[in-house]
Amino acid sequence: MSKLKFAVPGMILAFGLVATTASYGKPEYTKKEKKGCVYCHVTAKSKELNEVGKCYDKNKSLEGCKAPEKK
Image 1 (cartoon, one colour):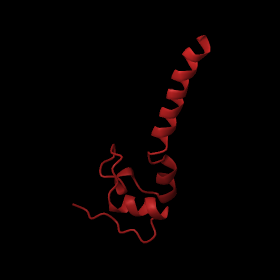
Image 2 (cartoon, rainbow, N blue to C red; image 1 turned 180 degrees about the vertical axis):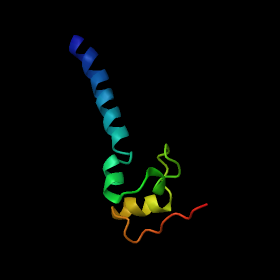
Image 3 (cartoon, helix red, strand yellow; image 1 turned 30 degrees about the vertical axis):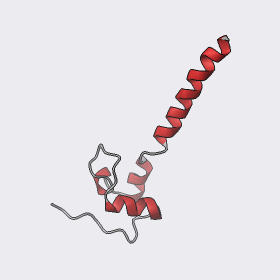
């Protein structure tokens, strides 16, 4: 019983870490492409992708992706 008391929260924590880290952009992308977060994301603190971000997610490259228009 005492092992189960630690195993269940441990599994929940591990799943949570895997689920959240897999869905965020990575700093390596910023270094590789030499672009800021808002180049691919709607805002710097948002996970939501703009059209360039969706293109990059699909192709894993900015080649052929149209740059966002400046406002």
